[in-house]
Length: 219
Image (cartoon, rainbow, N blue to C red; front, side, top):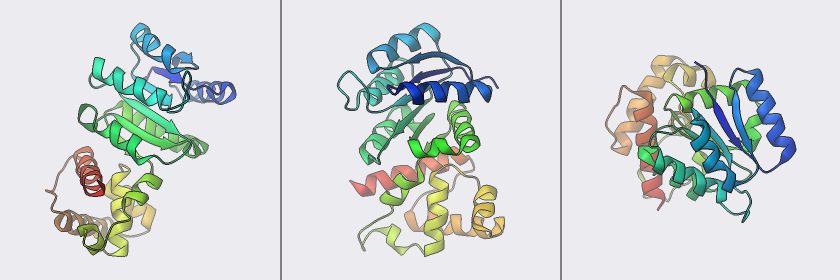
């Protein structure tokens, strides 16, 4: 599937490097901009399949990129967006998940770009309607008070939950943790039961359910 991308990043070297990387992996960059003010008209002009944007951008160097992305999803429901950040900001991840039902969104730390093949797969997954949140953000959300149901999860169940929230399938989690897929399925069942979440066959619904629980409990 060809995924046409509009890229927004104020760092010239990173912007050019990302554009070249995406082009090399078959994701044509139809527009590349350096500030949030240029992002919205670029998307309206080119109608891309995916927006990749830095969060902190000119003109105010605050959360301009995020606010532009949220406005774009308001104007065009379902527009897939991957937001890149230098630091962990749980509120930014929550803002994205609260937009348009949380489908077709990604929140990644820029360090993830170092793993090129994984980064490209994440972009394709989000473009297809998936939801991916950086594992570092998920780990922070997993730090719960003792009375929280997440505290009842075993150490292995916490590992599986963190992987679930990043969008991995049971088979992928099994490979990552060097256990059987049947064992992962059992852990997933235990996790959903302990958190009071209904089982779901659709992997993206499962991710959204887990993330919704983590966000709600963290407030």
